Length: 508
Ligand code: HEM
Image (cartoon, rainbow, N blue to C red; front, side):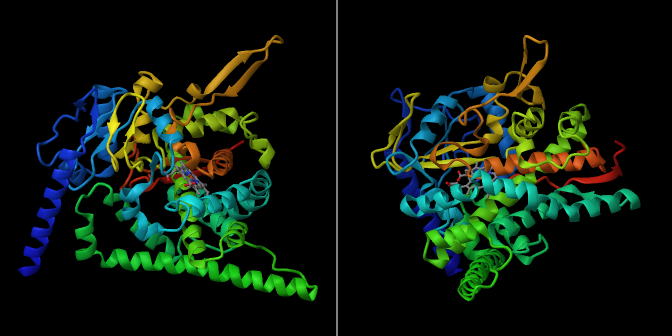
């Protein structure tokens, strides 16, 4: 009883403090308050909507009000207990925000950090800032340079695809149903485990289930103003999951350190060093002396690369099964007999396959929701005149951006890979097909500015390679044809219920 009284009083005091803070820290444009979405309530603001809607419904709501009401206008969202917030839909405004990354402009800020620290830690690339972030970014850049990607495509992909190939062949013979989301996740997990950390990692490892659980709950924290209360009162399972994730990060580092010691001894004795090293973890260990920082960083890189790429492959396959007229975009470009090498997967040689991949991510961005906070102590003024007090939360929703009719036209909700393709008829009558380039502020799927995605090229190459392998060897049929699928609550955009298919061997 006493505990309930203390919690209720503390919550009330916090609410009053936030309301007073809001009165003195108003967001304005031309001296007036910004418009708010329909249904915004006097005290609760949009809090109930955030609390009650699942993430997919929230993304649909953002898309709808952007197209039907606000267009490019920056509007305000209000959630009691949270700092004042705006939603940005105008590419010019977003470009400004992306360019102003840093302590004088915008950054992750306490709003994002507080909610994600448990899972991602404070020191990994996702939450780090300043020098610590720069060192990890540099190590990542080195790792994703061309030569590593080439080795990845030419040597590592075929090796790890072998298990998927066997499973699909067996399913084609026996009629077994395959969940393609799981199959792709197993592939991306093994690739990331080997290349980044020198480990044999499978999706059946307890880390994966723990990470997925913690990631789902972390995603919901961004919607739930009472998440802290939830964490302290009912967070036991979450804490357990996070401790499994952390132990796994420490294990990655421990194994890498052991491997380096063995290699040092081998070189000293004139014998062969160990066969395979985890390139990324080695680069991080070279750059950062503190092992707990490397452990955070390793988990950050793994989570940034594993789910996002598996999500994207699953959505591509789903959209192609819905609109099979686009399957030849991939099968014609990636001829049946060839083993795709890194150099054969450039955007110049495979523009249509890349168009399919980018078009899918426009509609189903694996990072569907982004936010920053105003770090500048005197606040910031946006190019459209919106004046933000310090600590304001700035939100943009790549899911809604991809459906913006102002950016993509009236057919924004349609899957149409051709919007990425530029065709020119050359003097000799041959048609040249090129991939169109979109700016990060129109297509914020991989973020932009200083913190743009480090793994974009790897994701694109992996996506095109896997889809080529899948579609030129097998035909797929969704078990339940229920139209466009929905995502489930998570930090990324997994498909609700997975993608279950029947498989047939393709006749070439
Ligand atoms: C389709 C797949 C992918 C998508 C859509 C994607 C998208 C993004 C986005 C939106 C961000 C910014 C997140 C933020 O605001 O902090 C980001 C950051 C990042 N991504 Fe990706 N990503 C993908 C694949 C990958 C892969 C394969 C890797 C490889 C490990 C990777 C590594 C990273 C890293 C390290 C960062 C943090 C960069 C920094 O803060 O400096 N991503 N990604």
